Length: 212
Ligand code: CO
Image 1 (spheres, rainbow, N blue to C red):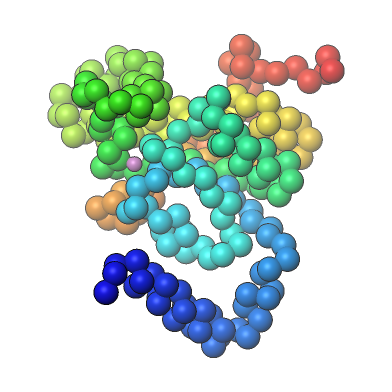
Image 2 (image 1 turned 30 degrees about the vertical axis):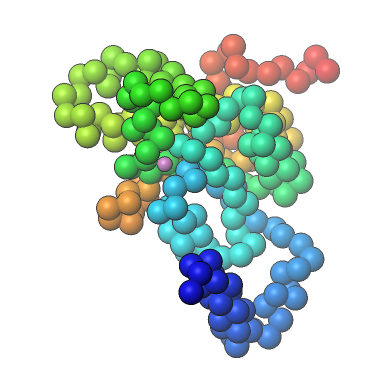
């Protein structure tokens, strides 16, 4: 059988399964979504956001890209963030990285990968900013794991630096910004960073909305 047909069959079984528990399962969900969490994760197939957090449809507003990056010129991510924060009034934004991340591993190398060089360049910047710490770690595997963690922290910081988040902090008193790392080998999530609403940032990144 063509491999893809397996997915369509599984979908039919899933629908029946849901309906057997609750007859109006789909109808009840059709009109509105009110998720409390936005998830910015890696595209890696081994990190299924809902599965690892025990959440279901309607609970996570999801954006995924290679190595879970928050890039200030990425209109895709920014649009998801703006909608999440301004319309859905999301309370928590979670950046979730993971160990054994191919994106982070390749960013540490020097191979020319074409277009993706430009994306991974953002992780090279995280390396440069933290080079002093990273270069004290002799074991390459441990150094790579630490870069995964530092990358998550840096992306959480990038979220705080957006006018979208700073305006929401002022207006709504949220979202909280979280940085987590998923360990593919054990299944556990680890908390790496958290920025509370209203946190004072480096002044160069702080917007002053009073002058509007
Ligand atoms: Co990854």
